Image 1 (spheres, rainbow, N blue to C red):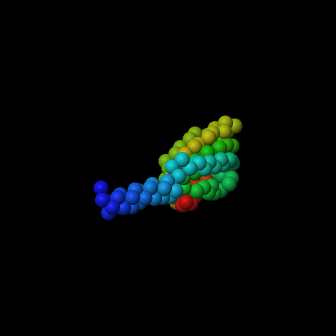
Image 2: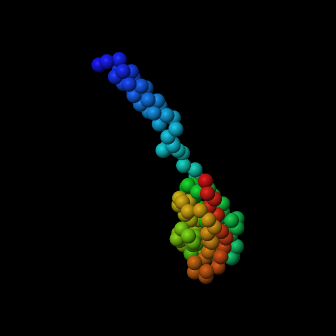
Image 3: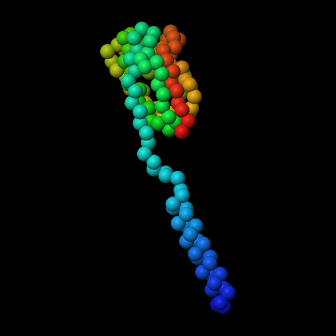
Length: 121
């Protein structure tokens, strides 16, 4: 191997090492900790408290729902439904993957109770 080939080989090796170092330094975190948001919702009559639930896209949401009367709790846009009976708290868990404003209603009566707001990251 002559001098020019040796120098080219060294340049190629240094470039490869530099690219590998940059790859490991700049790659996105694949195992970033997932955010979790627990929200207690109380339904009294046709009113939900709080009226709005605001979370960030990518959040694991855990709604803890109580009601003073039987309802079919429904989150539009995510097509989530849970039956809630008085005195029997219900958990509704999901990933907030779609951004926007989504009505929450009593699916049986179609009365709007509140809003889920999913903010972009």
